Amino acid sequence: MFEYLKGLITDVRPGYIVLESKDGVGYKIFPANPYHFVVDQSATVYVEQIVRETEQALYGFATLTEKGLFNKLLNVSGIGPKSALAILAGADPASLVAAIDQDEVTYLTQFPGVGKKTAQQIILDLKGKMGDFANLAEGAEAQLAGEKKTLTAADNQNLADALAALEALGYAQKDITKVKKALAGVNAATEDLISQALALLVS
Image (cartoon, rainbow, N blue to C red):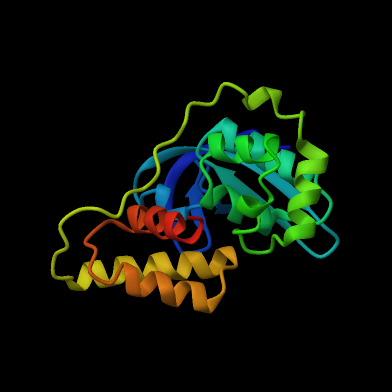
């Protein structure tokens, strides 16, 4: 029904954002990484509306490529919106496409909600059908190198928000605890911490 929404980002939470349109309607949207968006900034969010018997929800994406991959993943038996978001949050598009085309089951099972059987199903259903994404440029992996600084109160909140976002994506508490220890001294914005955390979890 919707292709995209334009408006002002009025709230960013670990599991969702709120975009207020010009007509004053606030849309609750579930993106892969909410902290890609910034409160009080105008944004264009590509959206996919999912309607079920008991609920309807808007899932949001920063790019059309991300939205296209989301819809591809939804075509796989056993993959729902939450699992698709978790995969998109943890994988750059080029690596995801390459993993599918090269039968990389192990790579796919690193995401929450994706066991070996589901990973094999992703490959079975999508291998050879990713032509729309064949020319994706390789994304640079998040790096953990760099000088570590003493955490400020804001940094602690950034890490807390990043860990809450991982929980919203479905990662297990043991994985979140591992990430918390690894990033305890990293001074970075929430979005960067999420990227670094996901790089750790899928390495």
